[in-house]
Length: 268
Image 1: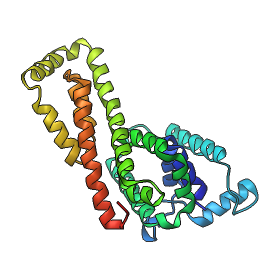
Image 2: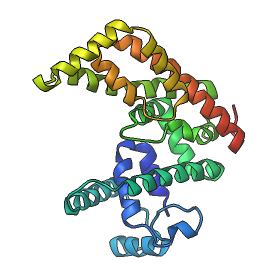
Image 3: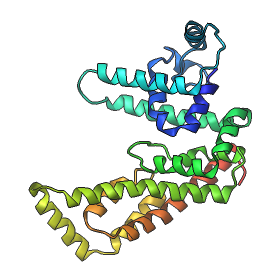
Image 4: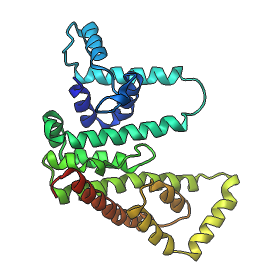
């Protein structure tokens, strides 16, 4: 029943926010009491919606219609939302739901033939694109390497998979660098003093921050943008920053892959 939505998520990563928003909006009230413990719509509700829309409770909606609906509904909820930011508790719950979803995907990878076929069809280019999105952690807080067991089950090879993810995540971090660099270039007079101090710090310590960035990217499970953006503002070389991030990402992903392989028994 959820297969068309899962296949759409794999084929169009840009729709993940809208799909997650729809899943949360139509979630079952007692979703946390029953496996797979994810905030998903109930099967009874889904069958009713499909029957009222297509005249058949087991209908498979076309991907384009699903995309239009979840995009429209997410936009409507955003417009109807009262002022103010999203509560921290909701953000933490969303992250927990994403983690639970990745665990469920890895556990069920052997039974998800359609999802495996879709991932295999996307191939390494699709994995690279998804890794770029995952690498910009301000948009996607869960590293894509969390799905390593699923990718191996889908037929990906361990070393090319880890290399592709590392390169893609570095591409996402590059977006953070460009943000910091652009901010530095267009900074207003209010930031002139801060910019001067940042550049003075760069002149005094050229290599230590790069080493710290490498260690941070390799071992700290937090967004690399927290360091990449300030370092771009401090006028550190893009090549130097991206090199430190690339090698750090390679170690980070390898450690995750080894740990997940041990937990889920994935190959590699």
